[in-house]
Length: 373
Image (cartoon, rainbow, N blue to C red; front, side):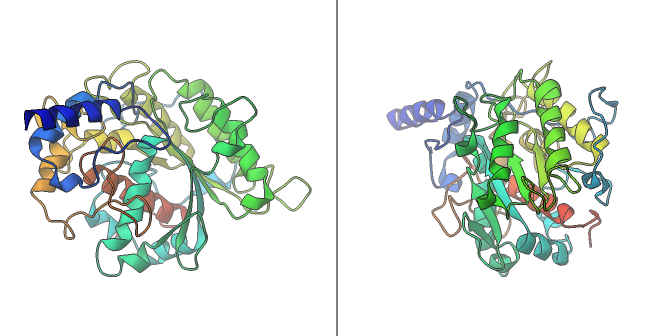
């Protein structure tokens, strides 16, 4: 048995880096033993990945960032007051109280183009598994991969990487970090993508990237060009008729390395503050990675729910004490496909929560004010 555990630990350690088609450690996260989970947590966090995000409760003291000029378009007029999808909204008790009319509108109206590497699978695999969770979810949260299907949300996965400028690599926000701006333009300017109305990019390693100088100004520029009332929206030559919503994201947590200049939490604070000031929506990876299901904050946590201060994996512990099909669902590689946890995860809860954050944002984009029924 020692040899088996050693082999698993080595495989998990080498799977840590962000990749487009990540090597998967397991396809049955709920069956892994506590020992294997703990080993994988410790080994997995040796990779140089990070996520920057903040929680509303932790960042109330943060003031406006000087670089965050107001975005002058109708996207700044979304109803409601909450724009950050962090740990507070990623609960089934919240998901089930979103007015169904807004879920229906989002599912039938949005065509999402999503670009990411391995950590980005936390969203998609959670979203792809949700329709198989409980009775009616196949309709309410129906989703189609790469091909529009009536009555289902369409996600074009890994959609934009082939539109990178010559000599550049645009697989996520961390690689060639300035490239996402022109890559997105190239994608949206292609008439084949005229139906796309939601854009989302995820981070791999957010550490020491220029969030203030590159990411936030780049997203602001895209919103001003392609958002509602944007300069590239219209019926003239070189314009597209369909305006686009842009979803911001923070980066994932890194064990014992989340705090400090350029680190995941601090980067997340910058992104979330910008979104609050400009009424833009952010899927807050960092918040979800560092808060357990009771809302406790573990600043030393990694991207899999392991916290040295907690002494074990709080998501694995929660999953082992709850019931599949009642309290959580199996994540999937594609709609109706094989069971597969999010990359770098040994449990299903992380991706479940990020899928709930995604649907929360889509409902808000569809006009919901954030007030629960």
